[in-house]
Image 1: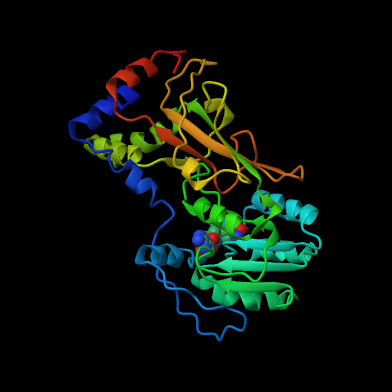
Image 2: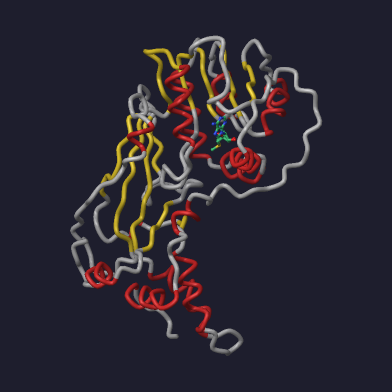
Length: 343
Ligand SMILES: C[S@@+](CC[C@H](N)C(=O)[O-])C[C@H]1O[C@@H](n2cnc3c(N)ncnc32)[C@H](O)[C@@H]1O
């Protein structure tokens, strides 16, 4: 088998023995890696009763006990700055609900910004340590109340003025957590309450992945001077089986990005989320092979002027960008290989 130098050949190789049907299944598990969390042995002071969870939910929330997942989020300065600034402008004197509090950073931002009360709801085992975090930072139960459980299962003693959540997954909608946030909005947000973030937009553009493909495939041409290119189809199959979370350079874009989804978090329903789909026509701005489509998002935090962009032109965030490589459909690939093609 020869080295797949273009999407055409790469896809033809897959047609011979490949299987890309795992794409969606694997994508849905990208951040749902199960890890065994160490047992937490403390007597929580403020933690409310945890409700029973289905097995798959328990596995999902156990994954969120993996501190490396949280460290990646906490180390994302651009993410943190956006939430910090928006909360500082929006929550003084207000009652705030933090859906999926995790390690508690957004609740801490809200409390530090003068929120009258913060409800920090978290379903993973991390909830048991949150009281210690809030106490260590000077916030007692009169200011921050920890509620352990799925937001869908808990009750709160009052409606809230502000709902904050960091629910965004890779290419925005990768995780299904937005459904939970919308449930929280409908159950707990006052009619004139605000959502942070308030709006989200997904963009897509055709991308050239020459450097990425070379990095993935060239290696197998010569390993200690031996030809191992027979493995290239397997490598290609694995690469096509799931979206690639990677940094796209602006120069890799072959056409102007276009909006493919716009979400108003104050009004969108879970039902509408399941129907997101669009067709777009791109005019190529330069020659190049289209290996796939790059996806990214921006969030607005209205009524503040804060915007969090994860675009290739913006400074890197932990979401990077996502590239969905083209599937092995011969007709589409043939068109896509024409330089300056309209896609
Ligand atoms: C992306 S993390 C954000 C953590 C934290 N808010 C931050 O910004 O660093 C999402 C968190 O929401 C929690 N979560 C997801 N779905 C939830 C639900 N339905 N109810 C309660 N917590 C949930 C997860 O366990 C995880 O800790």
